Length: 414
Image 1 (cartoon, rainbow, N blue to C red):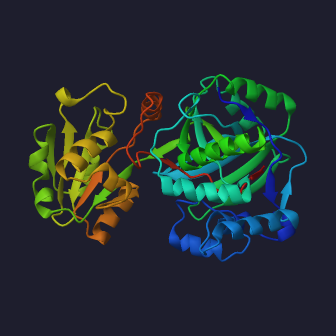
Image 2 (cartoon, helix red, strand yellow):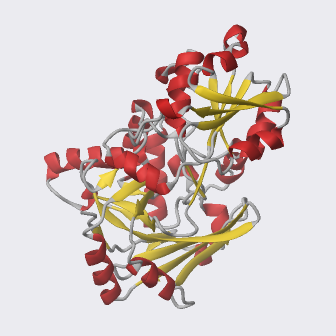
Image 3 (cartoon, rainbow, N blue to C red):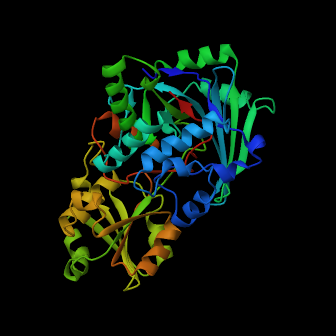
């Protein structure tokens, strides 16, 4: 079961510091563009200066910096334990959407029972996060969880608490996403939400490395000191039926591959795929968006200004929840079998780059001079949930949930 608890969160004292939230908060550690990172890190109190270090003793310095912020009152703690409502309002494809999630502590447990992963993780990234967590003994970022709450009980509470008296934070980020945070202080709401989520499962949307790191740290601390505050992790839980839950496709740019493999790609795929040549970008995207069936994807050759749509033939489709997803079909039949880009190479980003957003993908394909752009449409939430419940992992960069949960809004200190 998903075991959630209220907590006394720490937050920046924006008024006392005479700083606005957008100056002190940051996107997750692994998705901050270089230009934004340079801007944010120039502010000494920005949370990215604890999340990320650019010096040899980064973890020690991060711990010293973080402790000094707490001891000097730059971060202040709420007086009573509570949940929080985290609202994000954003525009995408001409629509204005809103996504609200529950911020709570979630008891850590081995993956695969109530907490379901769907992506592979990498040892190097986990070691980095473990060293930081061990040094600062706090969660300054949130795990992004998705829970199927068909009764929408939690959503009802979240909407009801969006009152001026409960609001503790509001700002707009450089991508024009508006962020708002509200306290949920009523004990009756806390009890109802806790009881309701106890019978649910949750999918990790973002934060696989951080969850596994927190779990390992928890197990180590349990062996040394017994159970404690380290057995929980800070998370935002969003209803899978939330209309603002958006998953964007992550496209693939292929480079440095033998040119003969690129030239022979269409011919190699004709055995398993129906091929539909296209002469322009708009037609390519128009022909894959909204197309039903498994294994529908687009391919664009920037140097030739041409491409094709490939659809897996019915006899090669499977009911396996992982193998039937477009991203898995692309990786198996195209990247690995046709182009020789193995899963290990993909994880090392060897001969492959990942880019979100279709417009940006075409622009980057032109800028980079890549040989091939592989285009996907996003999977549905039920598809990802079903794949996760099978106990197997999807290929690298299979999902991209937008917008990201920003770091430093609320902090959990052990």
